[in-house]
Length: 220
Image 1 (cartoon, rainbow, N blue to C red):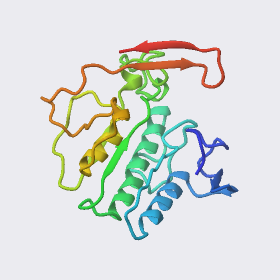
Image 2 (image 1 turned 180 degrees about the vertical axis):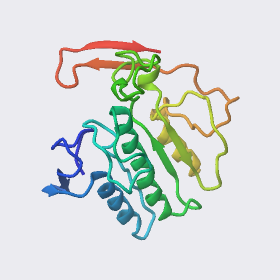
Image 3 (image 1 turned 90 degrees about the vertical axis):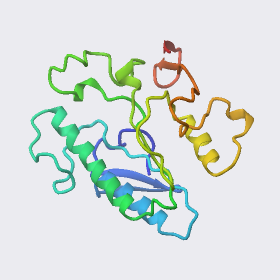
């Protein structure tokens, strides 16, 4: 794989990969397809398996996903429509991945890492003025998707406050183990909504992304 959200080359069909220190700078397969192929191959081995899959798309630079591997139009007219082809392609590729596993003995957790930038919102969207999306500690910047599937099922949706830090405790508790004391901020998000696990989340933003000095923006 490669590190970072944006591909090092700035494209999705000509990029550099690093596989245990072996660098290949001639990759031409659409990167989302390649990453899912790698995950499918990893899960094809005799288990138990653990696969962490971090997709580069959907991300800048915006580029129409391959025709036939998304359900949007082939000639997007703006950033929003281009972004939709990339999101639809993720749906297609994750479908390929899920088709190859059994949900009867596999935990699947899908999450986003941040909110969507406003420059890929609907044109003229009054709910997304400048500086309220990605990189901002406001609702559109920190409200991200989270889907989870456990053998035996967990039904419905939840309005509880959940953070990615909750994933370890949720998995460990499901397996019948006790989370270590050092994980006091990680809670099992499978509990019913009427069981209150937290009433607030602390969010902090630091700038710049790199070496300091830093300025900080907080939200609770």
